[in-house]
Amino acid sequence: MVWEACKSRLVEVPDQTVLDIGGGTGGFAVRVAELGHRVTVIDPNPDALAALARRAAEHDVADRVVGQQGDIASLGELVEPGSVDLVLCHEVLGLVDDPIAALDAVRGVLRPGGFLSLLVNQRHAAVLARAMAGQFDQAVQLLDGHAGTDRRFVAEELRELVAGRGFDVAAVHGVRVFADLVPSALLDLEPGAIAGLLDLERAVADRPEYFALAAQLHLTATG
Image (tube, rainbow, N blue to C red; front, side, top):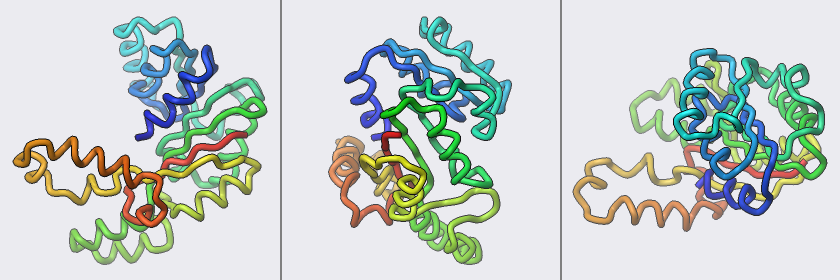
């Protein structure tokens, strides 16, 4: 679902400068580069960046993929202000101490009208998962949005947070609404079950009444 939403933007506008924050080994970045775009991956893990370089070479896009060691807090030192067409910030915002400062840093590197793809973990689904696993203490801890180092969001909270930093929110989608709830044995035994589940996921992804079940939320916005 996340790739489909980003791909439409990538196909629509050619030769974009893309920044993938926390992009790790480049599973997403290489696919973006294969569409003809220039991608910089910023990640704190040197081993992940080495794997990124190997993956890019294997897919013949090494000339369009660059890895830089750093994190979202160091964007201002690594990226020219207003130089990026598309920022991918997937599963990063929940790990930072200050989400507001992180979003400000992202907006600072985007060109006017640039596009943000933001993926975060969703709070209600995490509470439900812990409760169903009998981890009731952890479920209670997650009620206020975070436990340990991982902050989780609900849809309206995320929308307001992003809009409050000057972005124009385009859409919010639920990701893995039912996928984590359906027993894997059912998917293995029922013919066509996986395809049917994917169709169902697409059907409910943009329906707000199902956001509370989604393991993750994908928000797109312009800066």
